[in-house]
Length: 208
Image 1 (tube, one colour):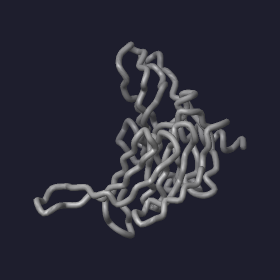
Image 2: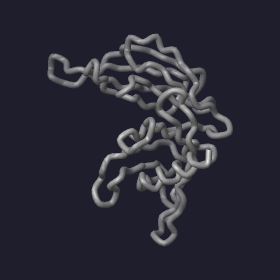
Image 3: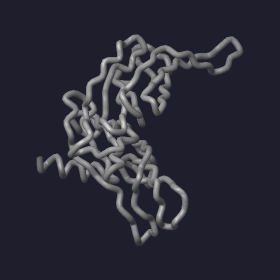
Image 4: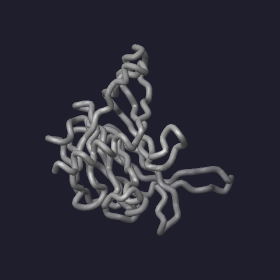
């Protein structure tokens, strides 16, 4: 996290008992990167992925069996949580990786929050601003012609809507694939053209 109003760098670490610790990164006297605890938070059960929206100062935290919480990212904030995406119809436990796609530059009303819904091997998409509306969901299927299997049992993801060159000019989503079947080997990562995902979500938004 890098807050534009207060240009400092923070990182978050969590544990299975629900603890979430915010650290400030700084340069010590030996000109090395050091870390200092500045805030402690907690959820009731095991947390997973988290992401900070640097532009709005919001911290999103995934709790495996409950859903996605939002709170202020600032180190001095009280840490009051609001549940913005509950496990249920649109999100199946375990909740895993989270990331924010910058969509305002692509003509959307708000940026998007992408959440790994591990319980049904899908990804749910929400507005990243209040009232955090649900927009749609997608799955990453197999490409049999290319010999690439689909994505399942995802723990983490990253997404960007920036230009990544000829292969991904409209952005990219990287998803961890926990069950790699083609070939049958340990987990790996799948790359998806973000434009394809945007098209799927926009079709669902148009129906609603």
